[in-house]
Each structure stands twice: as C-alpha cells, then as structure tokens.
Length: 107
Image (cartoon, rainbow, N blue to C red):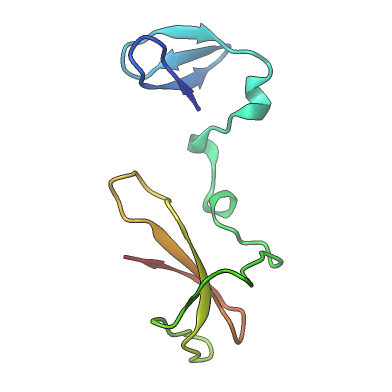
C-alpha cells in the first residue's frame, strides 16, 4: 500500500503512476512496486481466505462456542482476520477438530 506524501490518503495504481484518491497527487511507479504491492480490487476470497487443504489450523486457539454442521462436534480451531473495513468486526475462520470442515463466523 502506498500513502500520499501531501495528504496521507491511500494511493491507487493507475498505469505507470500512483494517484492519490483524495487530492489527486501523483508519483511515478517503480518496477519494484509490482512485486511489493497487491491491488485488492482484483483479489478474490480464495486469495484472502486460507482455503488450501493443508492450511495449518492445528496449534491455533480452539473455540467451544461453535458447532460443526457436518459432524456436530462442538470444538474448532480458529483464527481472526479483518476482511472488511476497519469499522466492521473481524471474521473468525474455523476448522473442526474432528472432521476438518472449514467455515467462517461473523460477529
């Protein structure tokens, strides 16, 4: 992410420049930017959510206030991730300790 030196707002990549979303200031883009920054406009949920079968949930905290729809187990590993704007509550991602089913919970 790049922030404007003039006003502090987030800048967006447009062609060969960074453009401030608030004041319109521009900065040239460096080729290193392409590997250091990810544009969230083109991301999909699968890039944000750990969907790999081998995702390491084991060793993460466990929740006992949940119930797996697949097997009825009432314990799951979980982690918390901010998936929306900062003023929205974070999302909890679960993996059943018995059958391995994954789901997400919203507060």
